[in-house]
Length: 130
Image (cartoon, rainbow, N blue to C red; front, side):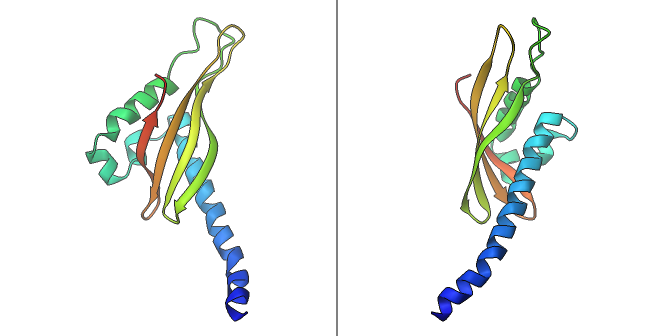
């Protein structure tokens, strides 16, 4: 009974951390969309050494596609569909790059594996269908 009481008391603390972690992960995706920060800064040190830089370049290329030939086409955006925590310091982010227009629309599924050391960073990127 005491264990249950302790768990109930600690549950809001865990939810508070998860909410802050979600916000931090969302800010990483926002940084990718806004192109205001060097994208390599968003990778973990291991990802920089392991070949994720080429996948990050491809992700940036897809997010930078011009909205031509149709002026009413939106700019491509990386949109989060869900964030799932595997452990307190590892999360999977199911997302997709989307672009909408009157005559043309497309989306590309993307999975980001996020890892938290001091801050959340991208550990792996998988782009499907392109």
